[in-house]
Amino acid sequence: MIKNIILDLGGVIINIDYQLTIKAFEALGIVNANKFYSQQQQTNLFDLLETGKISEAGFRNEIRKFSGKNLSDNDIDTAWNAMLLDFPPKRMETLKRLKSQYKTFLLSNTNAIHFKAYTETLIKNFGKNNLSDYFHKEYYSHLIFRRKPHPETFRFVLNDQNILPEETLFIDDSEQHIRGAKSVNLQTHLLVNETLENYLKSSKIL
Image 1 (spheres, helix red, strand yellow):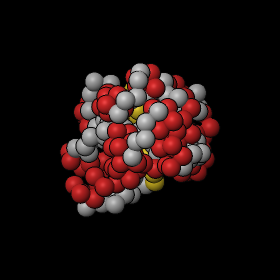
Image 2 (cartoon, rainbow, N blue to C red):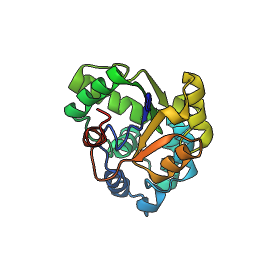
Image 3 (cartoon, rainbow, N blue to C red):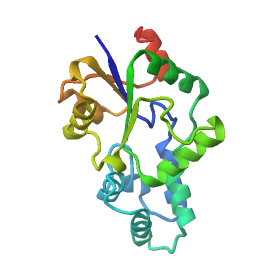
Image 4 (cartoon, helix red, strand yellow):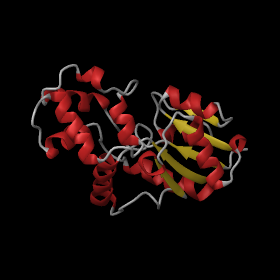
């Protein structure tokens, strides 16, 4: 019996395209940007940013060092945010319905620069300055200082909410995150080649 649902953000709720950021980094003169950053493998710099262990300014300075170019803050932020696309209105309505029937939580590997960017999108398109209308609570890696797929990250959410893993479904689009969730006995679903709303309907969760 599923009572609780934990959702990823990028690729599950907000549409993303990692290749756009890779191409944008390349356009700034960063050689081998596909190796420098990808969904599957990130350098330690991005891990530090996502766990709040390096500041936005520190991140930008490291990008400048790596590129060997005097890039502006805006150049770096625009390239880094290029992967962020849209929040489909139908999906946001689905989240509201989901919240009315289950305890729902957001668990996202994210960072302060992305957070600002998609908050601006929320304000512009939905008149919301956060996602609290759609979840009972949100957990952002750069604010809780831990990230997926580490088991301790999932335990942190479970303990904070005092919920049982066997009663909790975790939905993500990354295999490594699913493996981490399974290690603490969460029920899981890897969202691939389908939308969140279609999965919830086909599985009779909604």
